[in-house]
Length: 310
Image 1 (cartoon, rainbow, N blue to C red):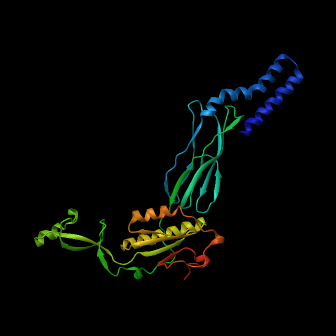
Image 2 (spheres, helix red, strand yellow):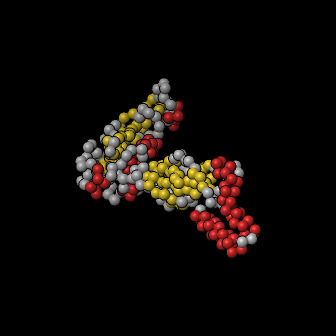
Image 3 (tube, rainbow, N blue to C red):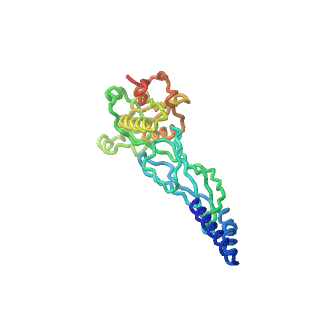
């Protein structure tokens, strides 16, 4: 709004010079009007200024690499007066804060939680000369979900093949099955009707799952946005391959808060574990751990610092 103020000061200076040179009633009247114009505009705009509110909508989740336009809406029951503000986007992992103008388009947000808030919000009179602050304490949170990406070096998958099977007790879909006679309480949807017709007995398809312990996938949470994107992408890609083998997993997130673990048995629990991990703090470059605190089957991240190397 500085352009409006500079223009007004120029008009006021011109009216003052004209009044000094002319010294007639009209020049004095013009000077008085120019002098009182900001006050008159402010009084006419005051009701609309006090009723102006900020509205902003954004999705709760976005896939990494998505575009987002920071375009707030200013609501007022009267003709909306001019509003100026800055939008703050804070990445909770890296603590990096960026201030942008409304309408800015962000091509790529790093994975993790992004906090969006407003700062230095001011609503002006209709001429854009006098401003009042708008208080907006609301914070919008966007979770940017990573996409699986093949790592440079794949794990040895033969080391993670199931060595035994057991009955699947929690229901759901299973790739491997064992055929047995139907027992009271079994789900009718899992009856093998073709085999039942051949044998003359009701045959039930019992889902089976690997009997091995969950595999530990350990990831180091760092404040570096590029490394976080890479490590989360590799974690999801490896986890998807293991889920295809029906291998249960344990995601272990190594952070300053300690090692936080989540059991993963399907895509739903996988997504929940990743989204929950976005609330954990991340290591800065100066406080990285010196040694591995737990035993891992697959280690992700930290190679540059020698922590997970080997």
